[in-house]
Amino acid sequence: VGRHLFDWPSIMWARWFPKSEAAGENIMLVSFKQNEISNDRFNKYFSEIGPVIKVEVQKHGSRVATYYYRAGYSYKPEISDQ
Image (cartoon, rainbow, N blue to C red; front, side, top):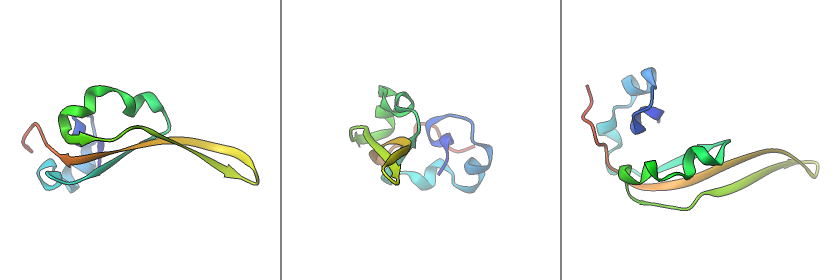
């Protein structure tokens, strides 16, 4: 699904997957930057939202990437699809 679910630009995803189709669904938020998903701006879109979890990806014992994720439960679209 796209960023449009949170009122950010996402032209094609908004066309392919309207907000109304996501209503009530659980959604995984994923980012390479912790601050993009750790703030409270997402609280209004979910009945419940989990903690941010850090994942370090390793290859041959060396860290090659870090990403963050959190689960949002029962998505609540605020604005109707246009």
